[in-house]
Length: 604
Image (spheres, rainbow, N blue to C red):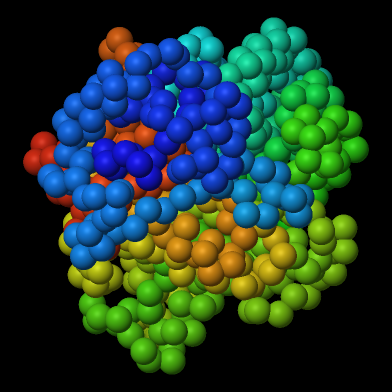
C-alpha cells in the first residue's frame, strides 16, 4: 500500500458510512471502481468527489479517534510484525451452494419476525406470553416487539449503514395465514416491498420459513391436549397421529406460497431454524408453546413422532421450494439453494468441576452431542432415522436424503456433560442418561470473561474454529455458513471483540480448506429473546424500548468498517481480536439469567 493510515481501499455500495471510519480512499481507484493496489476483487462502486488530500486527512483524523493507526507510520507500508497481526481479507459474495461459490464470502446479519415485529395476536408466542387472563402468561411478554414490522423499510437503512451484503430474516407464518386457508394479501405485499427495498440496496435476502413460531391454529397452546381432535382452529400439532401429517402439509403449502410469490427475488432459503432446540422447548420441556412436556413420560410416544414429523416438514418444504421457485434471482445457475440452521455447542466432559477424561463421561458427552445436533443432520445426510438415539439408525427415510444444499452453524455456548450414574441430578436428560450444565462450578471456565451474565452460560469466541473444522470433515462437500453468531452484552466494545474474533476463527478455518461461505451476526438490533425477554441484548443496534430509537453500538461501527473493506486490518485485530480476555461487562448489567434447561442453553 502506498498510504500509511492502516486502512485498505474500501468501496461503497451506496450505503451511509459511520463517521468514525473512512468511507473510501480515493488514491489508486480507476474508472471502473477497482482498487488494484489493495483490493483483490472489483465490484461496482459509487464514489463521491472529494480531493484526495482532504479525504485522507479526514480519514486519518477519524481513524485516530479510535486509535486505529499505529503511533509511528512505517516506510513503504511495512508493518511491525511483532506489534501487529497481519491483514485478513475476505472475498466477495457468491453462491451459497453452487460450486462457483466456493471461496466466496458474505457479510450479513440475522433477525426473526416474532422477535422484532409489532404485536401479532395470531401467533402462538403472543398467546403464550401475553399476561393472564387474556393470555397464558408463561414467559416474558413479546408485546410490540421492537416495531420491526412498521419500521421494516426504515431498518433496511441500518443494514445499508452496516455495509452488509446479505440479510437473513423470517417471514411470520401467522401474518400470512392468520386463519387456516385464509391468506393475508396485505402481509404478503408488505414482505414483497421489504424484499424490493433490500434488493434495491444491493442486499441479498435469505428467508427462514419457520423460526419457532406458528399460527395459533397449528397447535393451540390453550388446548395442549387437543380434546376435540384436529380442526381448522387447532390441528393438534406435530405429535398428534392425525394432526401431525396435516401440519407437515400446511408447512409445505406455506413454503410453496412463499416460493411462488418471492422466488423471483429470493434464491436462498432456510426451512427451519435450530430444529432440535425448537423441539426440546416446545415438545420436551414444555418451556415454549404449545407447552408439551414429553421428555420424562411420553418421549417415545409423543416426542419422537413429533420430531419425525418436523423432519418430514423440512423435506416437504425443500421439495416445495425446489418445485415452485422457478427463478434464478442471483444468477448462480440454481433457482434455489435450501438449507437449515443448526444450533451446535462446544461439549466438555466434566466431573467434580474439572475436565474429565473418564470413559463414562466422554461417552456421555458423545451421546449428548449425537442427541442434540447430529441426529437430525445425519438423518438428512444419510436418509435414515435413529429413533432411540443409540447411534444406530433404525428407520429408512430415503426421501430425506439430499435435502440440504448448505448447512447453517449457530454456536453460542459451552456445555459440560457427565454420566450421572445411579444418582441423576436436576440437569439429567433421562432418555440418553447424561447430566448437563452450563456454568461453574460444574463446568470449569476457560476464561472468566467469557461468562455471559444475561444468558447464564459461557461463550468462547474461539470455539468456532474447532466446530467448523469438525462439521467440514463430517459433511464433506456440504457448504457451511455461520448463520448466527453473537453475544448478549451491554458493552459495545465487548460485542466488537466477540465479532472480530469470530471472523478471525472463520478465516482461519477457511484458510485450511473448509468451505465456509459467510457470517451472519445475531442480531441486527436488540429484540425479544424468548425466555429472557428483552433483558438479553444481542443487537448491533441498541433499541430504546420507549421510543424504539435504534442507536449503533461500537460493534456496529467496527462491523461496518470490516464489511465495507472486506478486511480485518492489523489495527482492528490488535484492538478487538486475539484470544485473551474479553472486555468486562458493565457493572450495572444483569448478573443472573432466567433459568433455562441446561440441555438447550438458549434459543435464537
